[in-house]
Image 1 (cartoon, rainbow, N blue to C red):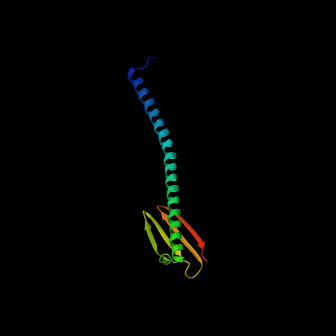
Image 2: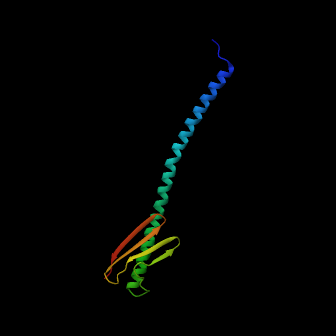
Image 3: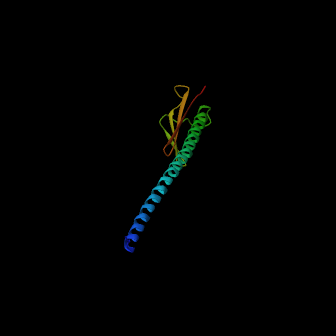
Length: 115
C-alpha cells in the first residue's frame, strides 16, 4: 500500500496546525500571569501613593490644630498630583481625625487622636 504525496502533505499540514495551536495556547498561558503581576505591582504603587496622600492630609490637619494654617472642614477634599485627600472627620468636635488618601483604585485611611 502506497501513500500518495498529496495525502502526506495533508497529514503534515494537519500536524503543523496542531503544533501551532498548542504553541499558541502555551504562549497565551504564559502571558496571563505576567499581566496579573503587572496589575499587582500597579496596585502596590497606587496603595503607597494613597498612603502618602492620607499622611499629607494628616499633616495639613495637624498644622490646622496647632494654628499654622486653616483647618479643613469635614467632607472637603484636595487634589494633589492625581491623588485625592478626603477629610472624613476633623478634630473640631472630637479629638479624633480621619483622613483618606485615594490614588487610582487604592484607598488608604489613617486616623489619629489630637490633644
